[in-house]
Each structure stands twice: as C-alpha cells, then as structure tokens.
Length: 374
Image (cartoon, rainbow, N blue to C red; front, side, top):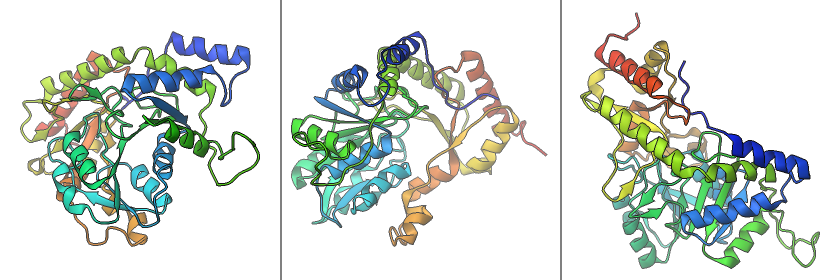
C-alpha cells in the first residue's frame, strides 16, 4: 500500500535532538526554539516568530492578540480545515464564509467585499494544498476597510505570491508543522509578525501570561501553548533543507500532472502565473461523467494498493457549527462540489518515481473502468 504523506527525517534531525538530550534542554527553553523562530521568520520575510504547540493554537493566539470584541467578524473560506473557524469562535468572534475559486480551490477573493460589514475586523486567507491565495485584492480591501489579514499558510511552506513567501504576506502569518507538512516538528506551529509589541503579546499568550517583572502575578489569562526545544531542533534541521524539499514537491506536482493531464474529466492542480505552488498535497477532482464520487474513487484506488485522503468538508456543512446556529441555509456550490468529488493522492516526501508511476497507473485503470470492483 502506497501511503499518502509521510515525512522525511535525516542525520541533522538526529544530531540536533541528541544535542538536546546531552545538554538536558528538552523542554520549552533552549537555543533551538529561538533559532527556529528567527530563521523561519527571516525565510518568510517577517521580523518575529513565536513558536507554539500546533497550527490550530497559532491561529487562536494570532486572533487573540488583536483584542477584538465578541461578535466581531472574520471573513474566511468555507473550504478549509476546521481549525480556522474554531479559532475564531473560541475567541468569541463570528466566522463569515466565502466560496472557493474553482481553479485554485482557495478562497474566491471576488466574493469578499460583499461580506464586509461594520463588524468585520479581519480577513483570513488560507493557502489551500500549497497554492497561494490571490493576495493583492485582499490587501487592497484591508487598507480600504482598515482590516487585519491573518494569513493561514499551514499548507504552503515555501509557496510564493509574486515572489514573496507565504506567511509573510499579511499582518500575521500562521503555520503548522504537523507530521505531514513540508517542514515538520511532529506537532508544532508558529505565528509570524512584523510588530515587536505584537510578538511580545503572542509570547505572553502562549506562556500563561506570566509578567516579566513578576512571574507568578497574572493580570489576564493565557495558555500553555509552548513548543519544546526537542521539537524546534527537528524543525530547524528541516528548515535547513527546505529548498530541497520544495524542489521534491514541485517535481512531484509536475510528474503527476504530466502523467494525468490527458484523462478527460479529471481536474488537476494549477499554478497561476503569479504563484509558486509547492503541491503540499496533489489533489484531483472528478467530473460527474465518471459516475462516482470521491468516496467510491478512494475505495477503488485502495483496492489497487493506493492510499488517499478526502478533501475538506466546508465549514457551512459542519454539524457542530450548525448546532451553534452558524451558516444556516448557506450554500457554496464550488466548495460543495470539490468536497464531494475531490481527494488527494500520495504526496509524501519519501514517494519514489516508481511509486508515483504506480499511482498514476491505478488512477488510469479505475477511471477507465478496468479497475472497477465487482
């Protein structure tokens, strides 16, 4: 069975982790944390990095540091992971949704302005599966309406928009370093900012809001969202070879596209002229002509020895949010279509060309009817 997305670890990770163990700096203090924060921020074109325990809490403290009022609104795509809307609701705010662009699967920026109200305070673009959102129109809207841009770049390590790195395009950039990401710390995340005062606030929020002048004296509640030195050591080692990793991902995307491009009715990832797609996941969307949805497609590929993963289900279709009275009677046709007809193929860093060939052959057999089970 060809797995979907497995990480690549090497000698540098082993060396840095062993240093942590030898010196005893294994918890949330140690130079690897500072080094990882500083170098990742610099790589993305930002001034400050604040490492946290995962990408979900990166979004949460990014929102929390803005000190917004209950009921304030944050505009985001419906087609994303639940972490985005969850972070907004956890802070007492209201998520407001837009549909997906049918080509990039990212948020349809042409729908954003009509969703802006007097309560709108922030925009949350999410770079989906390695392709960046079209950011210039969002930045123009942010300037026009005095809005903050909280950029979710969890899936787009090294991706670029007009030559600038994802995570460095908004006011705050949020990352995940989960095991399936291009850079992984097992679990982990980071918030990037240009503002030194904001960085201090973020550090307080991740560390129980201890006060510098009096450690166990608290004037507000924070969280224990710290990253460990051990995890940061792994992240730093991964960062040192990010160019190699991005090159491998882009090779993978090009190789899949070359082999699958002639299958009529199979939508493949694109790369807009202004973008550099890192193909974190190689997604495909089936046309209705095949007479099957993504669940059935995945089942048949599984019979061929190929593991897959489904696309996101839109936030407006999540029972937990409907039970909260959110998104009732809202419909987003593009997101609904790709959620039902889309999945992603094996995209891990250890995928070989021979395995990629096997995946493409399996896709061809299934979609031609030759791989159909009886």
